[in-house]
Image 1: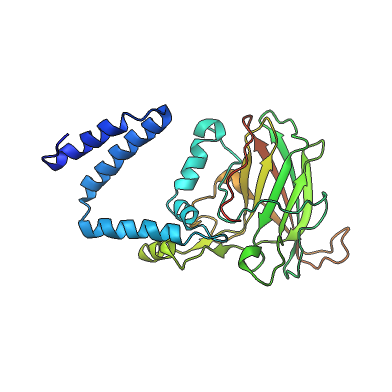
Image 2: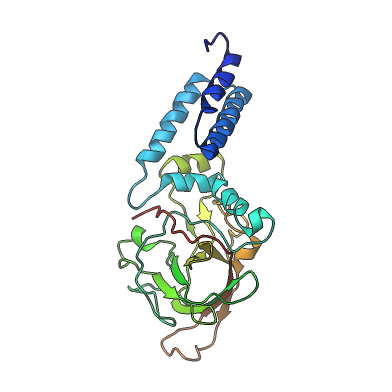
Length: 297
C-alpha cells in the first residue's frame, strides 16, 4: 500500500500485523499498533519527543545489569506490573488474591533453611522478627511440601546484593511447608526503602513530584506442582508509605500485622526487646507451576 497521508499508516500496518501466524501474537500486535498509533495522534507526538522516547527505551535496556533491572522498575512505577498481576489472579481479577509483584531483587538458589531457622547470615543490627505462615488452597486445605523462597531488605532498607556489608544471600532462604502447610523462621524486621533513582525511573519520579519509597515488606515465592506459582509480598501495617507505594503493589489482602512485643522473648534468650511477630496466610490457586525468569542473577 502506497502511503499518501497520515491516515493511511495505521491500516497499512494493521494489514501486515494481521498476517501473523500465531493467534495470540496476532491479537497482541493488532491491539498494540491500534493503541500506539491512537496515542501518537492523541498527544500529537513531536519528532523531538519521539527521538527522546527512543533514547529513553535504549537507556532502560543499557541500565539493566546482573544486579539491577530498570525495565521492571519502570513497569512497577507505571502500575503495569500490578495491573498484570491482578488481572491474571484472584479468579482473573474478580476476587482477592495473595499474588503480588516479583520485584527486581529475587534470586535463584537461595540456601535451604529448616523451619525455625534463621536467615540472618551476617551482622544485621535491628529488631528480631519471627514469621509464621501457613499455605492453603482456595478451599482452605493445607498445601504441604511446597517450596518457599523468602527474601527481604535489611533494617536499613537494602537487599544483600546492594550492600557490600551483608554476606551473600543474607536475609534470603528456602523453606518447605510441613503437613499442615506451615513454615516459620527468624530474621530481622525489614525497613521500607527508596527504589533506585539514578536512572530513567528516578527522573520520571522527579518530574511527577513523587517520592521513591516502598513500604516495608517480606517477599515470598511459593512453588508446588499442581498450583500456580505464588509470588507475594506481605506489607508492614505500620509503614508510613503504605498508602503511597511508588510501585503500586499494596493491596488490602497483602497487609500483614507486624505485632510489636516489648517483653522478653519466651524461648530466644538472645532476643532484645522490642521484637516483632508476623503471622500470615497465603492462598494458592490451582494451575501450572512455573518458575519466573529471575530479574537479577
